[in-house]
Image 1 (cartoon, rainbow, N blue to C red):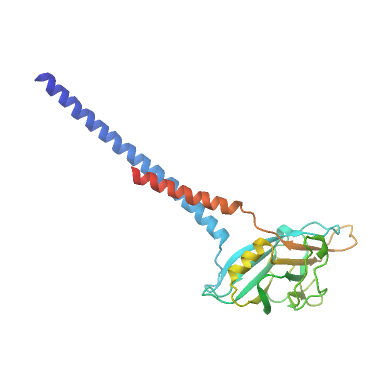
Image 2: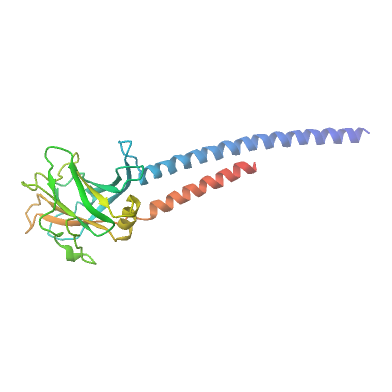
Amino acid sequence: MKILLITMSYNHDKNGTDNALHTVRSKFYNEEIMKTTKAILVFAAALLLLLYPVSSKADTIILDTFNFVKITNNGNPSVGGQLSVQVIDPDVSGGTDVMFKFFNNVGITSSITQIYFDDGSLLEISAITYSGAGVAFTKPATPGNLPGANLVSPAFVTTDQFSAGSDPPTVANGVSTFAEWVAITFNLQDGKAPDDVIDALRDGSLRIGLHVQGYTTVPPPPSLSESYVNTVPEPGILILLGIAMSAIGVASWKISKL
C-alpha cells in the first residue's frame, strides 16, 4: 500500500512537472513565433509599399517605378540610376488613362530634355504637367525619334505623336534637379486599363526612351548628351515577397499546432 501511494504520488508530481514544463515551453514557443511573425509582417509590409507605393493624393496610386539604362556611348557618365518614372493610375476607381511622372534625382549634372514612347496600349497624350518654373514641355519632341534608337534591339521606334520635349532653352527647361518633374498623361485604347500598361512595360511591348542633355563632362566629348531606355524590373523582389508570405503561413500553422 505504501509503495502504491509513493508511486501514485511520484506519478502525480511527475505529471504536474511535465504539465508545468509544457506550459512554459508552449508560452516560450508562442512568444518566439509571434516575434518572428511580427518581423515577417513588417518585412512583407515594407515590400508591398516598395512595390505599390500610395501617392500623396488620395485619388491616385503609383502602380510601379522604372529606372533607365544608357544605350549610347558619347563619352558621358551614366545617370541611369538617378532617372526614374512613376507609372500612376490617376483614378483608382478604374479610369481609362495613365500618367508617367519623370524624375532626375541629380547627382551628376544633367537634364531630361526629350521623352519618347514606343507602342503599347496607349492611345494619345491628353495632358502634360510639370513641377513649375524651370520646367516646360510640349509635344511632340524634336528630333522625332530617340537619338541612338538603332542601338537597342529591336530598334526603338517612337509611335507617332507619342513624345514630348522641353521648350527653349532646352536644357534649362528640362528636368534637371531632384525637385523637378514632368508628367505625361495618356488616354488608353478601348478595353485597356493601367495594369495593361504595367504588363507592357514589363514584357517590353511598351518602351520609354529619354534623351538627356546638359552634361558638364570635362574634357567635353563630341556630344554632351546620351539616350536611355527603361529597364525591366528584376523578379527578385517578387520572390522575396513570396517567401515572406510563405513564412507567415508556416508560422501560423505552427502556432495552431501548439
